[in-house]
Length: 118
Image 1: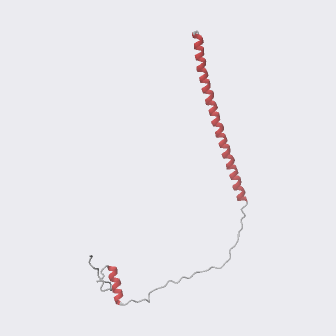
Image 2: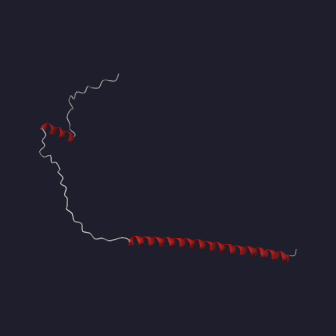
Image 3: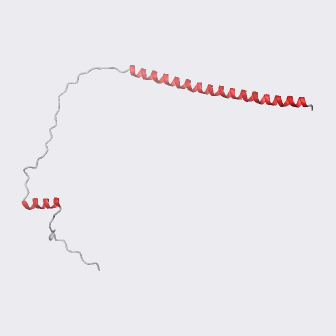
């Protein structure tokens, strides 16, 4: 084979590769544009249908002005007041000692003492 035929084959291979790459990127770009256009159309259709549905629902609302006439009911609550309650002096002293923390001895409460452990 002569040198010129070999060079022509190399140039044709390089040119074919470049053209194939260029064609492939254009086809890919066109495909992505078509996909995005389909998504945009579906979004627009969905938005349009949603707005039509909302408009239809809003148009079905009937406004009626009515006057409510009724009587007011009141609820009376009785809170018990314990001002008439009186304690003997010993009970008041025990309560005050318990509140201040100065309680006296417990005294005999009828509980037997603890036995030592055997």
